[in-house]
Image (tube, rainbow, N blue to C red):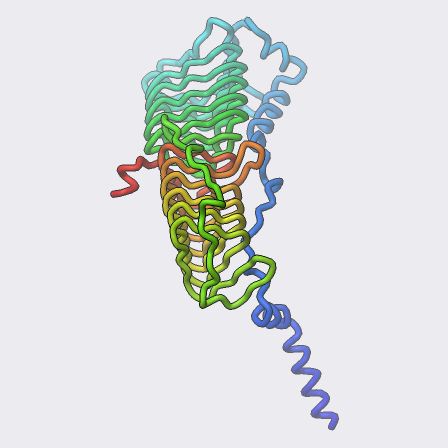
Length: 365
């Protein structure tokens, strides 16, 4: 008997660490679409504030005098050895003969006036302007910070971070590595590559087609209960397998499927959707909650999603989409993201590997 008790206790101790996994398998709790805590890691001024703190530490009590309007040109080295230049109202960056030959400088540039940076030049340290920064084509930058607007001409490369206290405009074929952010609007032209961008309004391309679609549930067809529904609770459907919603469908609640979800053209989901494979939104689909997939997410043209858009593989966003709202910023994130021109995202787009701004023509191709 004592041996049996001993074996039972041993088995119980062995199974105890596995109990949460067993319970999750028997009673799954992760079927509900993911919720994003927007407060997490949303300080888009993190690097900007850090750099300004660095400058203040280097200049000490003279920091505010250095940034005063009309300050005289000066240059030197910080306590950590980094060379710097402070540009006054009528000054432009000055380069040595060696820097001119190499088309490169390691100076920290500080400007108290609108700053224009030359083309095809490499700036290996940070640049700060108390007003605007305009960067000519083919420039290479470590980091840019402006209290005004920032404009990057075509084919510029940003290695670490860029932040504008107003608007940030990014030209064609620019490459933004690290974080790009703005307190105002950010606009990215076609063929821009980026990793992580944040702003109250992200505009992709020159022409914005978002906000042209409206939905009226009274003109739509209520979604009929599918035959392969496995669980239903409080307008939350769990589908065993795939589901295809007919065009112009209306459903008030959440839809979760163990495989693919296809939402027909013109449909309106007053809730969230989650696919455990691929999620496809045809043209002019509205989702008032989140869109989540363990595979790919593809949206047609003229779609509207108010909540987060999250995929574990790839997201392709069509033209004229609107994601998030002015009052409710959200997140689009996946390892690979492609956003078609004509779309607006309110909040952030994060790509773990690569993101690209594409045109409707390239999206079809």
